[in-house]
Length: 386
Image (cartoon, rainbow, N blue to C red; front, side, top):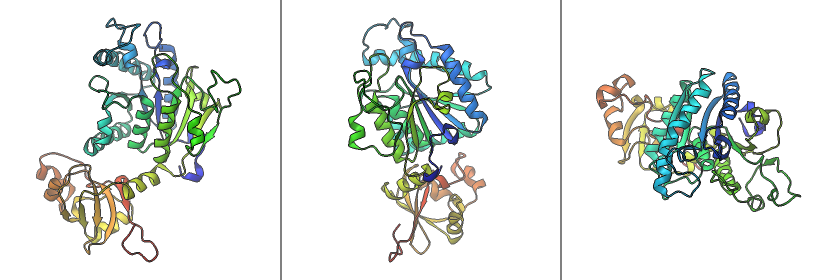
């Protein structure tokens, strides 16, 4: 969606990331998955898929589901006990999602992530490629923080922010946070009878931040503070975000039908925001020199293939940000490499059919995918700058 077309219509989204909190999915008393609620959500997700929308699920609940079978119920857990509970709960959680979505012939694929997977450039590219491949194959990725190996130093801390990281990673245009509250209020509605729901937010100002409260007691770890942090990241990625009450059945359909909620609307599209991020905010680790044929292909919106590369400069790894230069040495753009400098040196100038024989493995056809490329733009009086 372009900025001028940003709307509060859920059906307008091309790619949806749906974050589900523990308090919605897991019965606090029994520790069991709320099957009826999950089946209703599955019907909503199937309706989204039937109109061509791609869906990713970021789900909490593994620790909440896994603690009771291990005898960890009704008490605070140590880190290692949380990790053990997550290992037990992830199996039960994934199976529940699989059963619910199988009724609509939807395939679930479990993906576990840590903060390092989104910070380390190589692992970021690998995770992004896996998620986009799953989406292109028609699967529904089920994503959770990898609590079985995460420590306090590498945890996302809550799945609201994980949802925003995932949305940014796959260039999604819509992030849905299903919560135990129907949106952002001017004050804490549990304590302030005069608190009003804020239907739309276009910028995270100090006034908006002051409205955030604290997380209610229960299984969940996120509060409005973490939701605003997720919103800030989503907006910077050009992704709109909605906070809605997830407790009633068919929560996505309720958003479409006009249920109270808060929409956060960005000023740029996901593609424009990603281009700006690649072009101006990443420190280049090297350079790739391309021929005139590649320049023309990139101008037309194509990806950079090995055949168009004539030289490389620097020693960089897979996923690194690099400058793309013309044969005359002019900066033409910047992008994220799908190969290391060493591997590019082996395949540059060759056809894509020669990648596997030369490297010993079959990697992507593109050295830089079109989605990972920001072309330079001339400014008045400046022939070299972006």
